Length: 174
Image 1 (cartoon, rainbow, N blue to C red):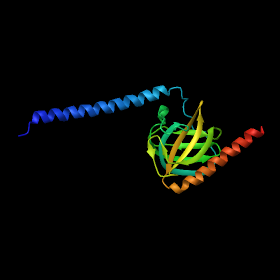
Image 2 (image 1 turned 180 degrees about the vertical axis):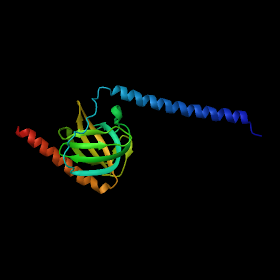
Image 3 (image 1 turned 60 degrees about the vertical axis):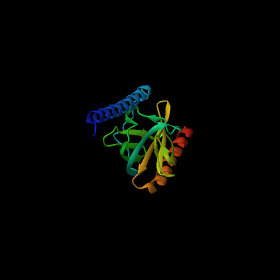
Image 4 (image 1 turned 180 degrees about the horizontal axis):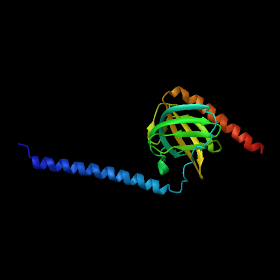
């Protein structure tokens, strides 16, 4: 015979334990956002960003402190994974995320683009991730993107890095 009362008690106990674990994870996420409260608001795209040099659709996998691929930034929605539409113009990188906060990375804030394999708990094959390093406030951030067509990543790295070199050359000539 099965003791239904004991079995129901174990099931309810297990469900309460799972709920507690999820609640603690949510509180940790909120606490991390509070700790990162000094991060300024995200810039928005200018009204006239210029002609698109490159466009890409894919996934946004998150942002981290530059060089620390596990230190996820969650303030201002930067920790939310989502679909993404990227547009590179002379003004900078426009990041449009349906269902999440859009943001804009001005050309002057771009520091580096490279091919990576992981960011904030997402690990892919070598070169499977476009990682863009940019300055926001007094922090350097790495943001990870994966195109629906991974062969595009190399073209993006070349275009962003050449934009950075032009910006540095222009600023150095002043």
